[in-house]
Structures are given as structure tokens and as C-alpha cells.
Length: 391
Image (cartoon, rainbow, N blue to C red; front, side):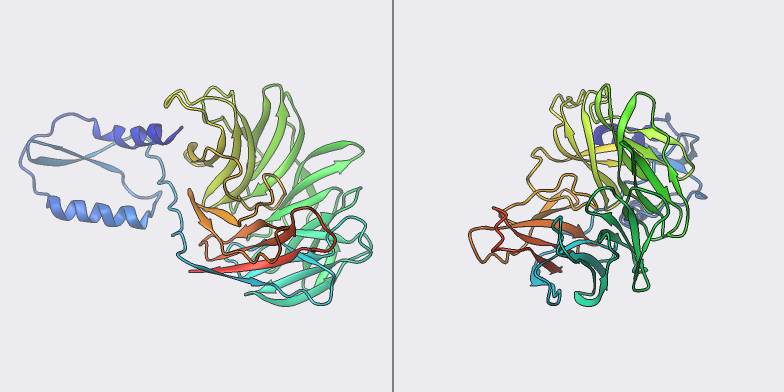
């Protein structure tokens, strides 16, 4: 559903007839309590849901059996200022930051990320300070994500792909083939199975577990993992006869297609990453039947309520950080979405050739990380990892 449909669903329980009798309710207090409750946005599955019906100065509380949708998650406050700082990476020729944990305490990256590099180390920064530089095995994997326990996951940059994880200062091979993409706070890992030309999303219940390969939806092929949320739901992307579509692979093993914002499933949906309780996606084609406008651009999807919201009509207006390079691009100005707003970050431009990627944002939007690149891929302008500390 879109925002209008979500609002209608919330208000439907109020359409319940005319009450009788005088009111014993303090209206001003009830309204004030309601505002405070909305700000807190606390949802209890054990709470008794009631509808307040008012007419001719009378109020009555009436129970309802209507399904009440959970509240949409609030966005973090957009920071008013940020300070940019280069991240240290030792004596390597270059380095990149590739991901971070939800709080922004840990960042992970790599030295010498280009294909064919003779050596590569995994870098870990804690609160902006380099705390680990770990040599990689012979296949030299690149880590793409890290959780709050300091466990990072990734895969080899060169084919054939092999999955690895970093734990307790050691880079170790994950079981199975393919690559690891993302890890949540529970240690659940999502990635891709890749072997002999076959590809499908897969996941590990922990770094020590055997991989589980996702069943391919009927009529789909060429699937890949995009991200994993804190509930263990993996968002994936497949090519189908209707174009590129997104599917949710839930923790219980069930697979759910995500219908596009136009409700007629005419749009191509390319999921990018989970942020702030939403799944951000690039949507192409289709038209919203409710608003009569194109749905192309960046949109976001709230999984529990199946609600779509427009973020930007332009695909490249600002960055949506992701554990993969899906939706990634280089820009002359570093900008990132905070909710549905754009946060313009201070640059560290030194030459006209400098450009930026934004590869991470914390859930409270206080920590942002990315890289300064050469826009022309010049060997004389190697990448630099950057952290933005915001308030």
C-alpha cells in the first residue's frame, strides 16, 4: 500500500456509529496522551486495542476486532552539521571503507581493493581509530559488512567466489561456495551461492553453520542477495518474466514477493538495502493508480505494513549505502539519504578529479563513511577512506 492507503487503514476503526450518554473522558488529557504515545511509537502485541468515537460532545470507548497496523518507524533526526576526517590505513598504497555496524562503532574496509592486487589486508576501525589490520589468506577476500560484535563477512574479489568471515583477529573460510554479503547483530549471514554457472541467494545461521540455499521462486532466475535485517529476513532480487523483482526470504523459510508501488506489479523493483526500518529500492516504470504519477526513482518499503513511500524521483540524487554495489555511484558532492531527506556532507576535495561514494550510514545518522575516488580512475589519485562524524 502507499501512504494514503495506510492512513485509510488506520482510520477505518473510527467509522463505527453514534454513541449515547454523557462523557466521563477528559478530552484534553486524552488528546495529550495520544500525542505522547505517538511520539514514543511503542507497540505492544498484548495491548487491548480500542477505538474512540466522538459526536455531539460525547465520547465512548469501543473495542474493535479490526486488524490494527503497526506504526511506521520514525526516521532519525537529520544532523545539522558533520565533520569529515580521513581514516588511517597504515602504509598501504590505498584503502577503502566498505561497511559498518548499525551504531557506527565499527567500520570495516580493505587495502588494495583492485583486482589483481598482490596483497590485501582487512581493516577495522573502532570509533574512527584503526584498531586492526589483518592479513588475508591467499585468495585475499574483501569484507563488505560488520556487526556490533566485530564479526565481518565478505568474499573473494576474483572468481571463483569463496565466502570468508573475520572473527577474533583471524580471517576464516565460511562453509560452502559463493560469497557472503551482510551480517546482522545475531550473527546471521546472507550471501550468494555461486558455482558452475549457478547462482542463488544463501544464508548461514552463524559463522560456523552450513549454508542454506534459497528455493528459487517459480518463473524466476538469476537471483542474488541484497541485505539481511535484524529479524533474519533476507531481501533478494530475481529476474522474472515481468522484469526484475524483489523477494523476501523470511527466517521461517517462506518466500514472499514484494509487489511494486503501482499495485499492478508493472514496475521493476531493484532492492538496495535496509535503513531506518525500511527497505530502500530503485523502482523503474509503473504508475501509481492512486496518485496518477510515475513511481520511478528511489522508494522505500515497510515490510510489516507493506507500505511504499516515495523518497526521490531521481535515482542519483543522493547515495543509499549498501553492503553490495547495487545502486552505488560516484558523485562530485557526497550526499546521503536520512529517511526521506538529503544530508549534504562536507567534501575533502583536493583536485578537480575527486569524486565520492557513501558506503555506510549508522541507524541514528550520526556516523557516515565512504571513499574519495578519482572520477577518471587515475592511478595518481588512489582512494581514501573517509568518516563523517555528525550531530
